[in-house]
Image (cartoon, rainbow, N blue to C red; front, side):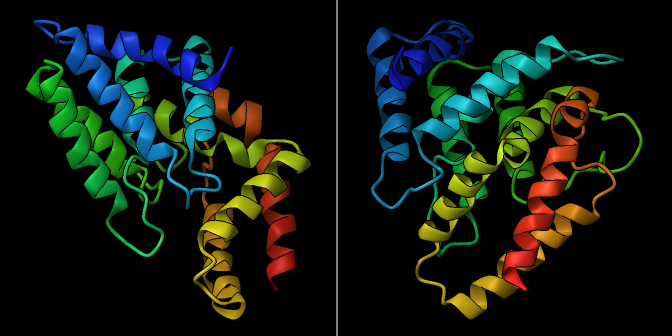
Amino acid sequence: MSDEIELRLAWACVAARGDPPAPTHRVVEVFDDVVGRHRQAHRRYHGLRHVVWVVRHVHELAARATGSGIVDVTRAVAAAFFHDAVYVPTASDNEERSALLATRQLAALGWAAGEVAAVADDIRATAGHITPDDADAPPADLTRAVLLDADLAVLGSDAAAYQAYATGVRAEYAHVDDAAWRVGRGAVVRTLLERQRLYLTDAGAERWDQLARANLTAELATLA
């Protein structure tokens, strides 16, 4: 199955949340816009394949969720589609602009205002992956925790996939010289390693935490 077909199937659930459902041409129009954004030439990691994997991991984590709280899978999938829809490496407000785009587009699909606002806040939370749940306590918003863990799942991938991720992100920041990159990227990696909970869900921690910390530690050594 191609990435686009897989995403079209996931998008059908997002579109169906509208009340009343949006006309077919509007559903297709919004989908094509989001997909087109993720095919921009400057994207080396934050492209369509990243969206596919975040959506897959959302479903995986939702199926394994334990404890209190309910995972709104459709809300998390919608946020997965839009969380990097605006991605300009030289900008500092990509998540906010992505959240505003999601607000407009989901409203156009007929989503209720409260649900639209929740997705927008989910997207904003990806800016630094720092939430009030970033401690040893169980996450208060399980849907948001699932999205954030799905977005960071790449950190816990095998060595080859992690290297492809790191190489892709570096290519997206080609405008930054090597010295500045080592400082900036090193700060990001250290911040992640210092978190008590790198993954907010128990399933995410069990699945990816150990390997993610090993990958991050190895990368940090190359940045020294």
